[in-house]
Image (tube, rainbow, N blue to C red; front, side, top):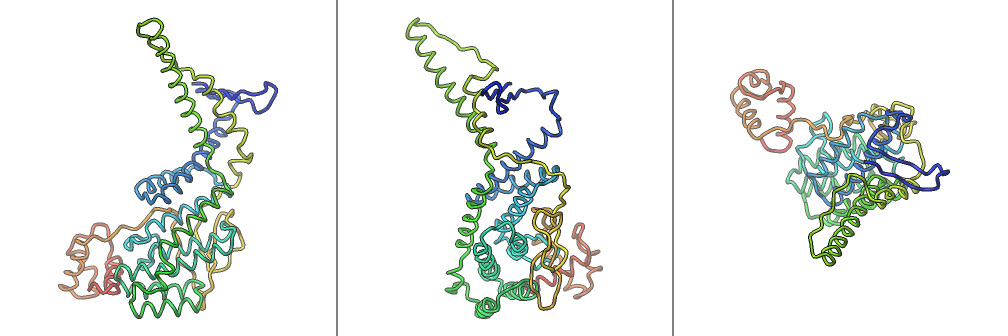
Length: 380
């Protein structure tokens, strides 16, 4: 099929797209351009499903996005979109406390989101927006644990923030009093609610999309669909006219060639697209924070360092490269086996318990860590 974008014959904006590859065009360059458009489209799709709270389609879009970005060299604006998608994935899992994004089991999705959001200080152009959302993340990391009936986990989260993040002292004192009271309906938590956090994030997304348009492929497809719909309507009217004059049936022969409207649909889109190089020369690696020092490199660099202030100067937990890659969740059956094993052999006999019961590919260290988590959650 051929799509021709007409214009002045001497103008460089005249482009013809056919179903076969132009012999004069480098396939790898064309392929990179197409993938760049697809990254933009998938990012737009991810933000749309996030706003609609459609977790199923959101996860599908993120998986596609993740698979695609692994196959290209990311430019600066694409790296920013990767960070945003990783952040949104954690927000979408905010209330799934069994889901993990780091090697530390006590780190909930919202706590992990704080780490990612801190690294996005160069992505968020408005410093006030960055601080507002960060504050809401602190509050809701504790609030969600209380909402789920896990005050011990809320206490652990607060201690982790004191240790690993630049948690303001006044906010720390306020959250500590709420945790001690185990008051899920505290006026402070209600004022800085999870709904308010989502509203602030959605406002940030709207601002980012306005500054970084990602709708080229969607607009092009929309114009093609519109042209086809107009063609179908014209065809129906033509058939009615023929039937009215001749009284017989008239069938229109399907054609593989597009109409003149379809030949023009992409012209305006290409002309209005911001001109910039889609693929960079540098091989940008996935983000992997390694130290607690303030980053000297911005988000365009191959590695990001997490900005934090810590009295003990500890390194923050690393965020896995994969945005959706989570550790295998423990099932209720495995928890029962673990409890039975401890009753039978005693606490600390993890190797014996592992040999006695079926835990799949888990190790004795996994059993030890899980038992520690169950004790913290007052489950045992």
